[in-house]
Image 1 (cartoon, each protein chain N blue to C red):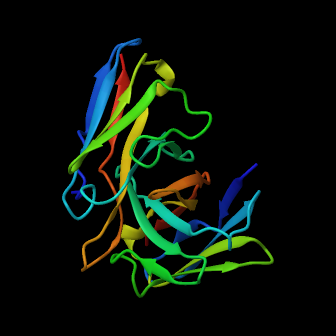
Image 2 (image 1 turned 60 degrees about the vertical axis):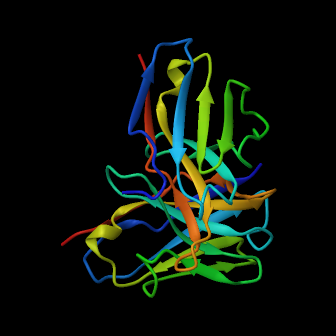
Length: 119
Length: 112
C-alpha cells in the first residue's frame, strides 16, 4: 500500500527557514516524479515544486529561489527546504506521487503538514 | 484568480446529478490531459479522474468526466452526502514563460 507521511511543519517568524519531510512507503521516491502542493487558508490548491526521476526540478514562480526540493533515496523520503519564509507561505503542504499515463497526474497524497509564518 | 476557472460552488439534492466545469485555454486544457481531485480541507486530496476521463481503481462509476477543446467537466451522479467536498481540476500549462501544473480554483459541492 502506498503511503505518504509529511512532517516538519510549524510556526516560524518571517525570514526563517524550515525543512519539510515526506516519508514514503509502498514505492520508491526515485522511481516516480514527486511534487509538493500547498493550500493557504481559505484558498485552493497550488502546485509548488516537482522533482523528476532524472533529478531535474522545477518550482512555482512564487517560491523560486527560496525553496529547494530534494530526496534521500535510502530513507525513501522527499524534502522541501524553505528559506526566507513569508506570511503568504502559510499553508498546509502536501506531498504527492506523480504518475504518467497519457498525461500527468498526482496519484497518491499525504495528509499534509501545516506551516504558519507569523511574527 | 486561477487561470483555470471553476464555479466557486454547486449544490444539488441527494440522488441527483451535478456537473462541475473547468475552463482554460489553448496552452493548458486545450493541449494537455486533465485530472480531477476530491478534497476535504486538512485531509489528503483524492484522485478521481486522470487522462480526461479515466477512473482509478476504487473510484465508483458515479464519477465521470470529459474534455472538449479548452474546457473539462466532472460529473457526479447519484449524489451522496459523503460527496460533499471541494473539487479541483488539474492540468499542465505549456506556456513558454512558466510551464508548470495548474489547479483550478476549486468548487465546493454541497449536497442539500
